[in-house]
Image (cartoon, rainbow, N blue to C red; front, top):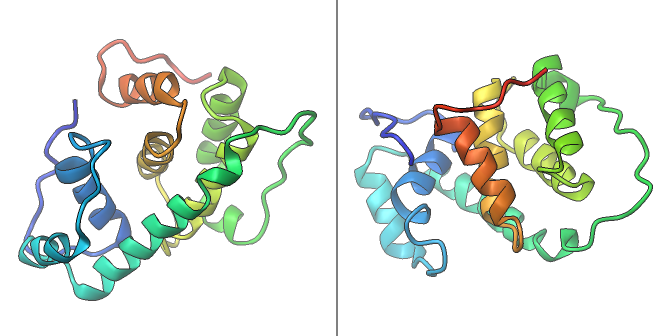
Length: 166
């Protein structure tokens, strides 16, 4: 179960908009299409800027556009080497967490790439591990057949019996 993040009067980032959408609209309405017109108005009333709302919708559109491309995992994946903006935004803890998720079978290599793509698309200088976990959760939420991985990730974020990362 998601907890209320405590939204203030002014929001700062795309991630704030995405988390608000995820908590207030998508979590309980997984299979319903949401009309972005009224949603845009609701987000303005919640204190988000039009620019951040539009960037968040673009982020979600890019996530949805990549959905069919990752349905079939590739075999014999090479080792993932991070570079440039990925290294700038994803510190060692975040990269280690992604490796852990892949080794655990929570993310396949294609889903990992989608997480990296969506994490770097947030336009934040650096993402915390908690921010990355939210991105992983949103990506898994959007993936057909990833219900078990999503449930595991949700337990790790909100459950009392979360598994330690080694």
